[in-house]
Amino acid sequence: MIDVKEFDDFKWVQAHQVSPDDRKILHRQYDIANEMINYAIDPYESARVEVDDNYLLMIFDIVTPTSAIATTEPVGIMIEKTGAHFITFTRVETRYIETYINKISSQLSTNEQHVQLSDLLIDLLRVVSSRFQSVILEINRRRAPIQRALRETKQVQTKIDELMSLQTDLIYLLNSLHSDEELLVSLQGQKLIPLTASQMERLEDVRVELQQAIDTGELSQQVTNQVEDSYAAIANNNLNWTMKLLTALTIILTIPTMVSGFYGENVKSLPWANFDSSWLITVGTMLLLMLITTIIFWVSGFFKR
Image 1 (cartoon, one colour):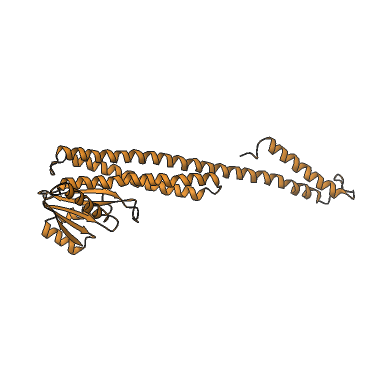
Image 2: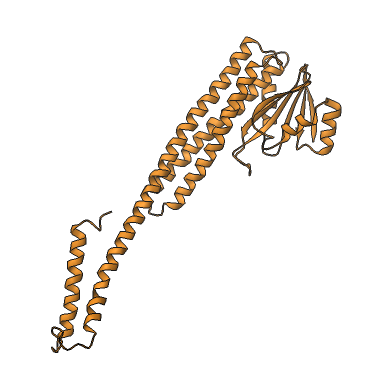
């Protein structure tokens, strides 16, 4: 689906869920190469800047919490070299940037006589970049109750699984943040879109914000990894203690079997074999040996965690 919104100096072409018919329109009417369209609509494309004879294409990773593919997905932003067209390629998960563009254009038109394409682009990158910080802080918030629950329950495996899910989200987020930062460095060095000193400074502010999100994300990743490793070690220690306890109980419970089996043989010369109360002596011998074995295990610290 293709919609067009006109500004004073350029047209904003909204290409959503590009169909084969939409591709033909983009190719014929806007002279966009099919290869560039493929890059722009590929949901697995890496964040980068691509340039051909007519357009500059930016593939920028944005946060998509509802996506079934990953925590982030790329969105294609294409600018014609003449500055006449600003084209966005979106899918269901990434279409929310259209709302941001409308808000930004409304704010710019309030403050200025007309909306400049460079200002719109920089403000859009700033807004979508700020969402990374919010998502990472949300991951930190979700980690806190998991840590508390791990301290209060012996069933830690479920909580460790939840921490692993947070680790996966952080991996996707950090990978996208690094890619987006490289894209901004490329954008600062390109000569196709002329940027004023003020715009370059604002673009640098966006890059700094991404770097801050990277630092926060890496710190969160380190803490999450440490918590997961710590409680995995606790789970292993609990398992080791359980195995030690079962081994001790097995040894202790083997004693009655040994004694009763020994006296169960038809041998007349066994001690106390001819006494009427010999079974009581046998039971007493079992209990005494079990008690002695238990005391030996206890003194040696076998029952300690």
